[in-house]
Length: 512
Image (cartoon, rainbow, N blue to C red; front, side, top):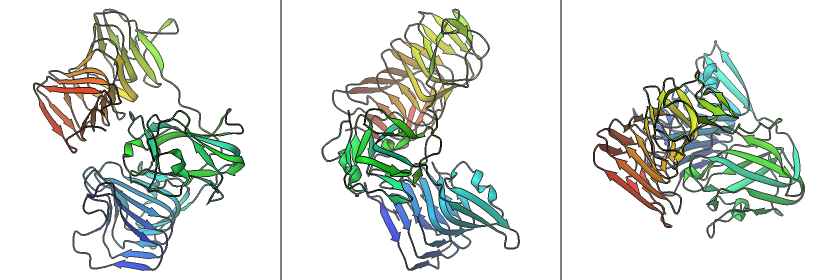
């Protein structure tokens, strides 16, 4: 499913009953879901057997393979389930019912292997009870595991969790973080509310998107039309509000991803209830990235309302540099100011580093540091050292002044540059995720390099101005595409005088 690429399509196999048997698989063959194109295999009932061959859930290419099992029996004999087998693949298996029999479930070498286990039964060869502790395995139901030495078989069983009941007339969904951490637009194709495992009627529900901006045909009403071929798109990522007309009980919910642009998928969100549409009470809050399917037009597993709503994440506090003309940045010395007094840096809570006293100032990074953002509002700063600076979300470098950063930079939240001025990098950049130059100038000077930094985006959103100067002799690798501008009075320039640039995606794209 998904052997050849066809844009904006899913190659789909749906089994609702009966029997499907795959035999005589040649050596090296496999049952493959997702390759050059997105592929989806839905098993709702019946029996599917593959004679001693593996299941590859996404194989090569920056595409998604998705298996959705709600029932039925799926047997691979001695074959393995391999998630994200190779390349930049994204393999996702979500199971809420039925049985799966295989030799083992393992990740490949691709991007994002995910196995969601909410219901049903898994049978594997050998003692594999430790599977539930793997970071890519998400037991969202109540899971029990048992190893039977007489048959050398591990059995995992999951029962869906019951959600806490909430009764409100209004429900509000707010996306707090999107898959593309720097995206400004959110989209979904469907949104359902649940009670006792069934969908709550949406016949008399009205839906609005206060403050949002939706293009024609991609309005919030599409969330209720029962079609995953339509979608709601909001360019400004504002909340969507559902009015049931009267208090209505729910104990869970689910949504379906849009038809394209997986970067617009919500990964963190808040669901609230209200009696009057004015005062709101949080009934669910997802504060870390949820394993939302990369596949297009795929429904999230049922999300039960938690018994206790997680607290909102702590906002980043601002620490202002107060060190001498030449001073160390570490967790011991009191070279920062907060609340009127001297403090040391901390790597255990969200912090913004503010450099606001005019230089020249030499800041030596003498110990590893983690920062959520760096804000240069005064000129004359140089950050040096061999220790690593890790950028955590939102991974923002901003300000109105020029600055030079000569330390290794890493992190998994990408890197975003905003504001005016020129930020000069003379150290290696090994962060993963998107590199977004929204405004101002970034110079990659001698001594700098980049390794697999995902997509590079310049001058997005509208009315942006951004320049990238590549003036070093190093190697600059971007595993994704280079995307320049989105029109609407934006302007961007890439000026390369030295170095080698390697783009792993589809080359240069002009955003529309």
